[in-house]
Amino acid sequence: MNDLVSDLSSTKNTKAAQRTIFHVDVNSAYLSWSALKQLRLSPGSVDLRTVPSAVGGDVRTRHGIITAKSIPAKKYGISTGEPVVKALQKCPHLILVPPDFTTYREYSRRLMEILSEVTPVLQQVSIDEAWLDVTDLLPPGDRNAAEALAQHIRQEVSGRLGFTVNVGISSNKLLAKMASDFQKPDRTHTLYPDEISEKMWPLPIESLYGCGHSTARKLRLVGISTIGDAAAADIQMLQSLLGEKAGAYILRSANGISTSPVTPQRDKAKSISNERTLSEDIGSDNFETDGLPVVSSLARKVASRMQKAGVSGQTVTFQVKSTAFQRYSRQTSLEEPTDSADEIEREALYLAKALLTDPDGLFAKGISVRLIGVGVSKLSEKKMQQMNLFDWAAQNLEKEEKEKESEKQLEKQSRLDSMLKKINQRYGEGTLGKGMAGHSSEADKN
Image (cartoon, rainbow, N blue to C red; front, top):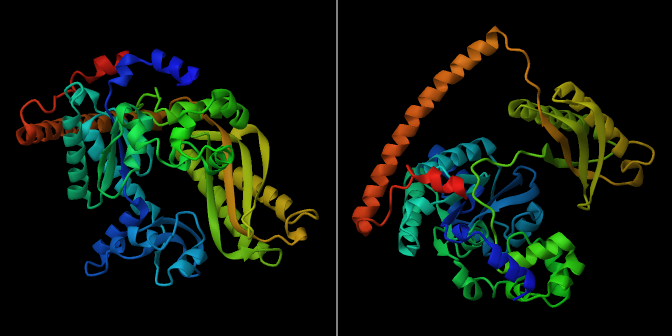
């Protein structure tokens, strides 16, 4: 094994290596959630999950890209991210439904509530996936108990919410994530360090978590086609090919090494942006009538999200994607951070005109656009203002809400006790321990 891997292996936190980490991932989240909504509104309708179907683009004009697909659609070779037009060529009878992010956010919230009933050490990574540290709920080293708990989670989600999840189990976040991506749907998979050579190394290099298409392409050019090839590669060669950090990451990950803890707080967003794929291409002839309103709408949505998040930003970016799928962008930095919708809209419109309609802009070069995006970066929390009567009233309201939340936590604890009792009765007394009460003492040390 390479010297870098040996050094990392020997210096790893011993306690971290003994942890039990779950990665819970919803199977075809957007498609599943759209299917459930349709069945709720039209009980006799077809379940989208059982037929070739997909979420994406503008259903009426059939523009845009595929954002989620059913398992039957996958059999036609339809992939996430490809244009709707191309997907329809592969499967002319493909059923298309529009995205519904209000519904998706609600199902995501309910999923995280169920997971938080199992353990408070939960890190949500996206709308449909999360890591859980369940170490203190299980007897040390008991893999059967871990699989029993994973099965319980899958049954709870399916029974209470109506959709399925995969659960990956390992001793660190990287391997748990890799395990959850194995065969789907509705499965539990393990990928412990002693299973890496059998389960992970034969996989194509593109399957390695964090290895993008560009990186995989570079690796294949030098003969690295599997994760096992990367695990045995020379560190100097990898770093000369990919760069110091990326090369070291590929080597560590290919050997299953990760020391990142499950952190309940999500990382603060570095930017906030909105994009829209257009139903009609935008060029010089329809920019004023069809393009400018989109820019204004996106800018105001970004500002609204910033205000809800309590942040201001100092860099405004406008970007487009051409009909040839090339991205172009312009950005400007403000003197002071802002969350003002008027100011963000004004800057976005200025950038849009500079990029598109100036004498040397894209339209003058005969380039039309199919996607428009507005974003704000260099975010910072807004400074607290002096408290007034309304702030005082809000604080009291917040206090009442916290008291109500405390009552909810007691209810969750009761449900957890019931869950532990059921699993112990089914799989034998002592299968799962009631680790929540003592959780903080060990977790805080690590």
